[in-house]
Picture 1 (cartoon, rainbow, N blue to C red):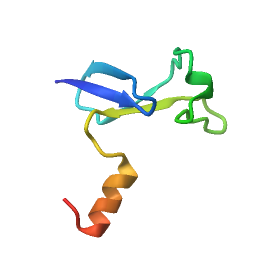
Picture 2: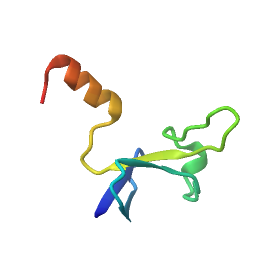
Picture 3: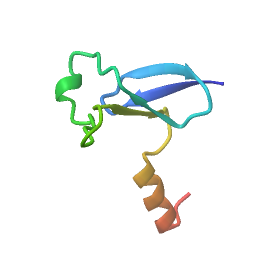
Picture 4: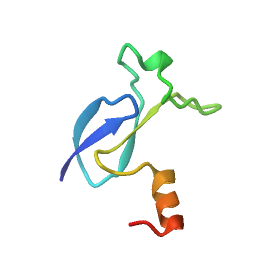
Length: 70
């Protein structure tokens, strides 16, 4: 299945598969070094999370569930 993914910065990419998110490791776009959505875990390579277009971020989905919202 082909899906469109969106990064925190708004960039999009199309990929095949059933994943709901993926880690973008290349960080090849000019703004990547200063992007506020860039994650830099201690002892690991920096990356960016891209999520399926239209999906809520995980914490937003958890909050909706806690509030009983659809």
